Length: 80
Image 1: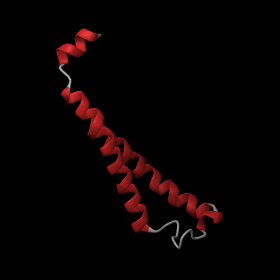
Image 2 (image 1 turned 90 degrees about the vertical axis):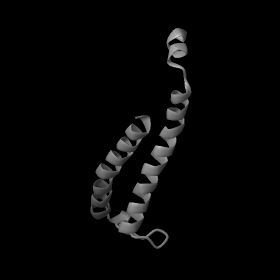
Image 3 (image 1 turned 30 degrees about the horizontal axis):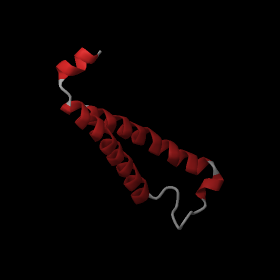
Image 4 (image 1 turned 180 degrees about the horizontal axis):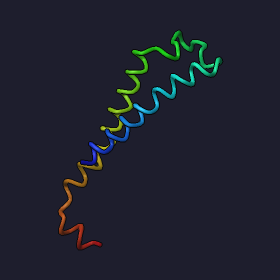
C-alpha cells in the first residue's frame, strides 16, 4: 500500500509536469537552446526521466513498507 501510494504520487506529478514543462519550453525562448545536444522537447529523454522518477519513488517507498511489515502490531500499539 505504501509503495503504491508513492508510485501514484510520482506518476501524478509526471502526468501533470510533462505538459507544463513542454509548454514552458515553447513559451520561454531561452529554454529552447540545446543543452548537451538535447532539445527540451525530446520525447525519449522525457519518457526516460519520468520513468526514472517513478522507479525511484517506488524504491524510496519500499524500505518504509518493509520496515512496517516487520513490526508486530501488538508491540507497536503498546508503545503508544
